[in-house]
Image (cartoon, rainbow, N blue to C red; front, side, top):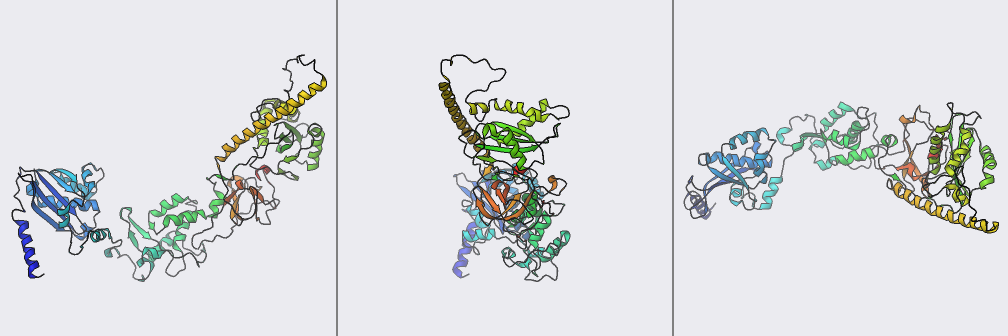
Length: 615
């Protein structure tokens, strides 16, 4: 400092302690206290309004913070500036009503804060001695107190001062005493956090039997790294990607230990995140946990998907004539007095006419065809399209989710109606089928807005309650009457077709609310639903719900051809609603190769429990 600078500095000191800059404190004048805190110091200026309506300073205060005070959160540092300024001007302000002006808005609401720290409670008791009102002023206007709390010579610009305030030491040197003496200075614990994440390529597969588990794994992580103070979240153990000898991938192993053991029971993403966040930290921790669980094949095989079913509903066209397209399905029944223990149900897709035939569980395709020819062929002839189940040796065109599943609803209706009329031994159900078929076929049907037999005959079917016909058509000849009946039948079928189309559109809209477009492509790996699979397990409730993953070989319409193992002796074409896409981005060291279920329960014959569930 040269002579000119020294003289200017002395002049500033004289102006700061002499009139007209400083004024004498007078208790009767309005008073206010301006405070501010930086990273290194606290400051305060006491002002009073003079008789000439100008505000003049009465005194200045500033104090350097201790290392402990510099570690306070911002609100406590600003409150510290208020407390220290009040202590400095205690004689002048005690018993005086005054305002405290701060650039930290949270202090304005300090008196209404419910949860206080021990330090804040102590300061609150001190502040209770004064008649204070806190006022907020933006920092850019709080110039005097701000200047007293900063080292402007070292930090010449506002940007530099703000950068200095944002600089925080995450691991102070005094907190490193727990590290072992054998810790290499280049180990993961001394590296920046971004270096703890290493590339995924060229990583060997994780061998579960060679990786420490439980407390042993935590001990290994402590040896490899250091504790880190994450502020309000407490002290956490920073987990490196792998050990210093590159033999163990710690992050993947830790997620596995928080997810797969029985005591955690393959917990979901949020539960594992909450569990590990208590004590551990590494960059992109949440993303790694979600990635690990998405690629957990055991979870995909055993948990029920909560997403929308893939594959939108695409109803098949409504047939143009009666008995053109027929659905067929069978179901088990109790053995009756005639030896029947099975029932076959045929449903016309246009007219909704049903025809039920009793049968036996061991019936072959030839036996079923013989019964159809004997009882139904003479009335309806041969349908152009017959869809049904792959039941044992009886194979028809498989139904798809595009069909409204009318035959399944009919089977439910059949059980409901039989309950009213079967005997105590339930051995007369086969003799009741003709009457129940008539009851259905002669009753109004919601899908076609008329009775099924009216679609086929063009008129309402007669029953014991029908009135005798009138003679108003007696004058017309048989030929004219026949033409009229044919025309009426055609119009009736057209009305039924329009009503069935409208019903399909309603069903489509309702079904697609819970469905989504498919996202499968050739080459993708997918899990296959095991619903309907015959297994060796005592019960399907505790068996795997999904198999795979399997590779998609071909797309056929809304179905997909899968590459199944040879042990799956079944047709490899499945509709999209039985598939779920498998994730294919496993965590480091966790293999994504095709894994088999924990037990093999597939029937080598590929037989199905409920054949209609396969597409």
